[in-house]
Image 1: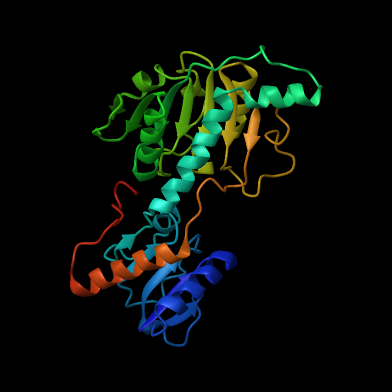
Image 2: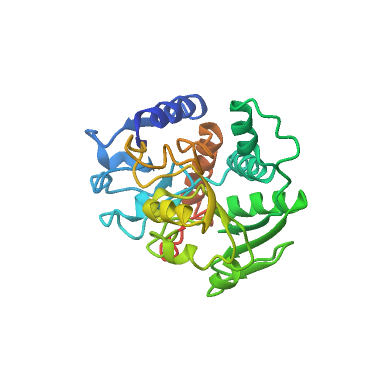
Length: 306
């Protein structure tokens, strides 16, 4: 029995180290090259090339090494009968929510305005007040719900949006109620999964539906946003600022105007990172369930793409 890891170098090494400690009895294949591809029963992947899994004819499970699965579903060479599972890690939610809280609170308390005042050696004690925030969490899945509940518990006004109705302690919209959702907010936190429906979702047309200047926080996927439209909305005052962790191209090109725009904060896709040990344990549990014919946890719905 062999398991394969097909991913960039850094996550590959981290997962390899954990697997060798936790499951030394399993033979590991790094990459898709092996003389015995028929023995590979599980593939752990991140950003694999199209067709990278084709030679593994006896695969029983594909496990995404992160919360996203678009990189797997984009590969039309993968047989439809092979189950796909993804990481759902409370530690990942802890990191993501802390990042979002940091972005929200810095905006709420005018932190960047005070930074600018400091650079001028200006005592701005009475210049800025707490902003009255109406926060919209666009995508209340596992990660989005954790952040939304924590913001709600801090006393912020929060509304949520998801594809299907959710039981939430705050007002929530679903389905075709996007316009109603957007009309209620002045902070937009984007946490939707990437699917064909969310490709380019954060565009100028959507921004024009906002009823007041809005602060954008995007931690979902770079393909969800149209960066030139974000710049346009900022310059026209539709957006009052942006805190962005994901980009159309990664690393962000040096000539991108996002680097120097005065109303934009950026981080290099670090809002939430996977933790290999917990992820490996989840993968092993999924594989045991496949072997025992039990229902899988966190199995991806191919139609919904999450």
